[in-house]
Image (cartoon, rainbow, N blue to C red; front, side, top):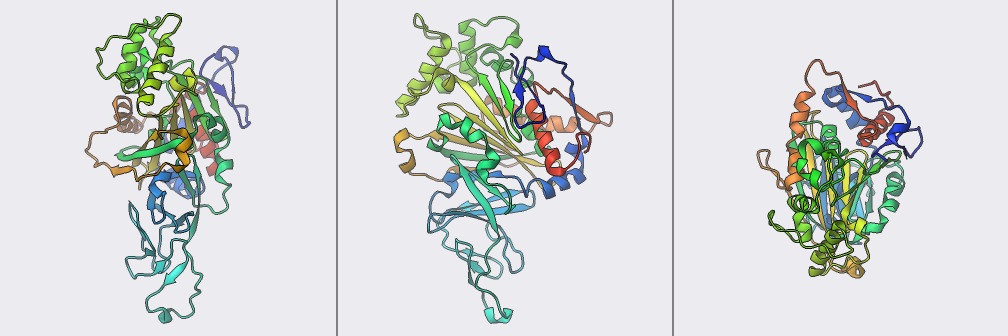
Amino acid sequence: MTSSDVSTGGDVLLQQPTGTRRVEAVKIPVSRYLSPEFFEREMADVWPHAWQLACSVDHVANPGDWHEYRIGRYSVLIVRGDDGVLRAFQNVCLHRGSELCSGSGAGLSEIRCPFHRWTWGLDGRLREVPSRREFGVLNDDYPLIDVQVGTWGPLVFVNLDRDAEPLDEYLAPVPAESAWAKLEEFRCTAAISVRADCNWKTLIEGFSETYHVQGIHREMLGMADDVNGPQVTWRRHGRLVQSYGLPSPRQGRPGADEDVFASFVEVMGGRIGVEDPDAPMPPIPEGDTLRGMLARMVRDVNAAQGVDLSAYRDEQVLDMEQYNLFPSITVLVFADMLSVVRARPGTHVEEAYMDMYAFTRVQSPDAAPETPRTKPFDVELPADADPPFGLIINQDCGNFARTQRGLHQPGLTHLTVSPTEECRIVNLHHTLEEYLEIGPDDG
């Protein structure tokens, strides 16, 4: 079985062995990554209508907490009201159009425009207008423009389209498929943003296939099966399951346990409490396997921190579930780890931002709902800063601008994409075509 799915026009792409059918490459117009006109169509017809990740619940956990989500020219203000209700508004004063808030913070008691001091409550209702009589009859119910808001686990989503389907319908079936991980038990510890000189699709597509592991992540070949991980795509979203603690078949030879262990330490030794790349492999107990031992080491590290992973099977500890959510979110799930990568378009077609959210599981699963939430460390790095994400993600960051530059070559008109290895990229473009009401050859 390969890591492939083939579209039949329905919501789910059924996994099939590639040897049973003819596979034809998918052509994607390069103009989708370079054309300012195409970018403007996306900004008009995709981003105002799709549900998108705005922040973590930890950013807006307490009354008075607020967070600005900025994407291209759009800005959404998410606030937690005094009544504990989470609300979102278009970040604009209804007087002269000034932006109301910028950044993120706590202790907000009202939303006051810094330009002329028009003021709204955290529920969006108008409170104060200086020199109000000069405006004639002004209805007291002159609310801020509301935005749909919803949560999935520790993530807050917004949708500027008031008529869009509810979040749970939009995300289906991802929440049900990932329910085993109890994402609500995770807390956000950091949100770090970096600017990239590329199109937003160039960025997120780097997190939408494992075909590139053999190219820029060769350190992973000794400890990850990047070939046989099953993939499935639904109407908008997709999933990969990738096994760690196994050698890649691309090596063309079986990996000795010692080699697999050394590779695991190099890529993610912190999960098993081993930071020294030259550390010898512990003896594998009789009747056990390397993966069984690695899973036990992960559980031991978490137990030392008060987190009990005994209820999770070895494969839930060692196999990564990666969910690609349209338009531009990648959610990486292990029993002990949750990471989220978000791509955002900037102000023009070849500017994007990568936002990395790191989460940790709370100490006691039974106490998750009552465990206090604190504001995550939140920063946008300067353009010349080195990415701080670790070996593998840093390698991805180094590939964004290089890929985008290559797209400018005059002889390149289409990308040639595998419908099997890169099926989640194909699915992204199918969904994009649906939103833009265009065909596969349009760009």
